[in-house]
Image 1 (cartoon, rainbow, N blue to C red):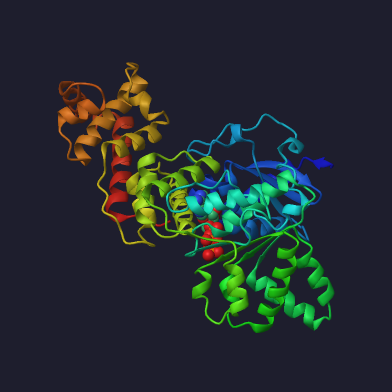
Image 2 (cartoon, rainbow, N blue to C red):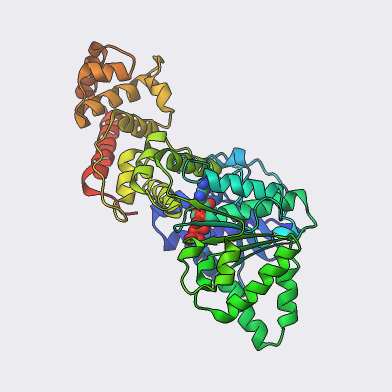
Amino acid sequence: MRVISQGEIWADVLGYVRRNISEVEYHTWFAPVKNLGVQEGSLVLGVRNSFAQEWFRKHYLELLEDALRSLGAEHPQVSFQVLPAQQEAMLLPSDPPPPPPGRPPAERSPAAPPADNRKSLNPKYTFENFVVGPNNNLAHAAALAVAESPGKAYNPLFIYGDVGLGKTHLMHAVGHYMAERFPEKRIEYVSTESFTNDLINAIRDDKMTQFRNRYRSVDLLLVDDIQFLAGKERTQEEFFHTFNALYENHKQIILSSDRPPKDIQTLESRLRSRFEWGLITDIQSPEFETRVAILKMNAEHNRIDIPQDVLELIARQVTANIRELEGALMRVVAFASLNNVPFSRAVAAKALSNVFAPQEVKVEMIDVLRQVASHYNMPPDVIRGSGRVREVVVPRQVAQYLIRELTDHSLPEIGQFFGRDHSTVMHAISKVTEMLGKDVEITTSVNTLRRKMQGLEEEGLDA
Ligand SMILES: Nc1ncnc2c1ncn2[C@@H]1O[C@H](COP(=O)(O)OP(=O)(O)OP(=O)(O)O)[C@@H](O)[C@H]1O
């Protein structure tokens, strides 16, 4: 693939973008972007992680295309690539990763596309990415058993549960598992809706033979939301025959539904009884620990460094639906990025307050420490550590001063938090008090930090 370096184009695109969005947005999202040149007519941009990639696709694709149009491109094309891990370091937007030292874009290509028999599967939905908890361990064990002995363990496997609890994920996981071990096997994932539409089209276009070949020649058939068969007589009829053909040939069938077969109204009894031939297993809502584990895995996958207490706050807020749980995490990440603040419980509560019932979150010592650390661009542990150079001592004193001002903690408690005694804290506070109004840097820092902390507490920021 020929790669043309197009530094000038990128500079012009950035100029255009900058004129059309706010400075905060520009610095948050566009400053860390790497121009990877133009490849086959498409401007390729390197972004820090898959979250940023998704964000760009959703929010800035049109703007970028407009920018290219303004430069004369008739059919502007923009694509995004996630930069290799060591360059991502999403952490905080105020702390962008160092620029990549001129590696050729070819090396940054994402992993090779999945094998063809996985084309109907979501690459994210694997067993490795599935957090097992008391709510889903039976369904998980059954899925694993089926993956190991397709057509033999339980056929069909029927998984039911409320929306967004991982039914589709588990089905796809079986597909991936099988595809890896048996690359020649045919795997088909389909929603009941698509199955119905395919059938309608096949009837209309007189292509029933192709339709039957497609669904009856697979080794693994995954059908989502089978409750939608209810009331569709012709589809039930066709599905009945598909089911029989596969079953008789010992091909594995996995079905998902929002309710058990016996509760699906207007389902032909011959289908209902077939759905009950194998194993019926359910997935319940995850409990707190599982929700935290899911959030943690998600954050790690997206290489987002987010403290445990913040994840716990999110997990307390969203209890029933894992899709919403993931959405809440992304909302918090976007909110913190756009407002250029470090992750804290107060930030998370604010980010979620528009969607969920607001949670009362008091500012804690750790929140102030993180905020100060982010402001001075150094790790919180260094500020709490034993370093005595001015670069560390000033942030430490500022942190102690602000904690005293913004929280209800006593001097000994603050001392303990910093591994020091209360007289050291008292000294720090009087030192900062003395410098306020005299030392420009300290005064500005204290005021900025105070405003940020109070802004989050009282006025709120809009995502
Ligand atoms: N145990 C889990 N571990 C990790 N991620 C999970 C888990 N369960 C669900 N998820 C994630 O939650 C999201 C929703 O899951 P999924 O789409 O499988 O739900 P579903 O039960 O099929 O919902 P629906 O009924 O709406 O089709 C997905 O992004 C999935 O990866």
